[in-house]
Image 1 (cartoon, rainbow, N blue to C red):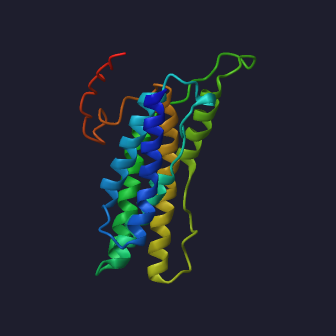
Image 2 (image 1 turned 180 degrees about the horizontal axis):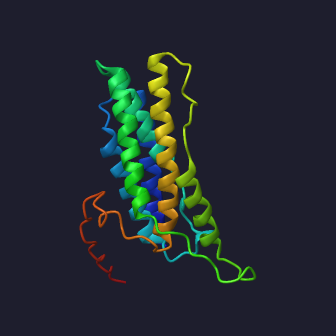
Image 3 (image 1 turned 120 degrees about the vertical axis):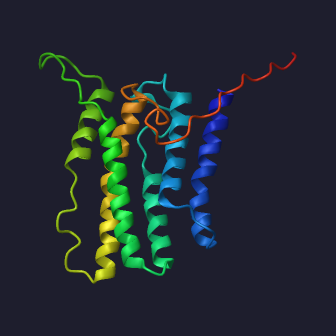
Length: 201
């Protein structure tokens, strides 16, 4: 239990640094670096809490606020750049590339045999998120704005598509349907965890 409390505190503290970074006008991480950090934090959480059933998970089982933040950081970086429009366009493309990577890892939802079979909560949730991840589209929502606002809108819409994919991946990862992110090449393999020394009683 102590390990879980320590990890929960670490994750909570990590969630606060984005606000401070933006407020203090500090050097911001690029989108890929920021996103890899979010994926790593989720891997740490899922390793600690994976044995817990999805409906009773004691951590953010499906939470992509960090992915949204990374997109916002990318937009801020572009606004501060010398070529905001080109930067925003590249950011939207980068997020769609990441979405494609995530979707490639997602397995098809399993179909229960017979309508009378009651599906587990996690399977129902994953099926809904899988469909959402494959069907979300910006359409023409960004039309009619100024060139700068249209590119900003496109970057935001791309982030929404990415969040839909990542949240499906999070549930799949919790349920053991997909391999760890480092096996997919998204993040570096974590260092082995050393066992804690036992304190003398």
